[in-house]
Amino acid sequence: MQNNLLTTLSVKSLKQAVAIRERIDGLQRDLDRISGAQTESAKNRAPRRKKSKMSAAARAKISAAAKERWAKFRAQKAKK
Image (cartoon, rainbow, N blue to C red):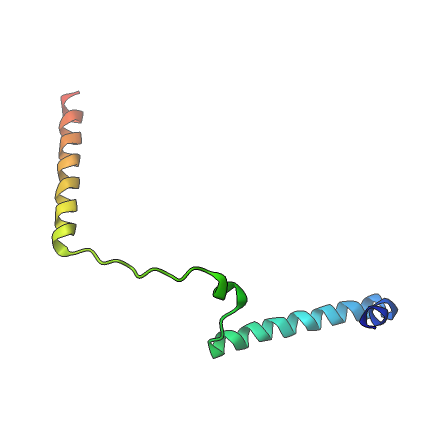
């Protein structure tokens, strides 16, 4: 029955109906976000991984290796 209703509406009425539907959908998304409800796409996504933390010793080791690489690069560049 709804298809018959849509065929009898004017273009102006159809545009109004689409605009109202878009507003309703936007308000529904806002309400879901405020209330903390998950959308279907959010439910289907893989869970986020926790951010891994690197120890200070590991950061220092990586930093020292990078400094060594750059020193080697600069020494090669100076020879040329």
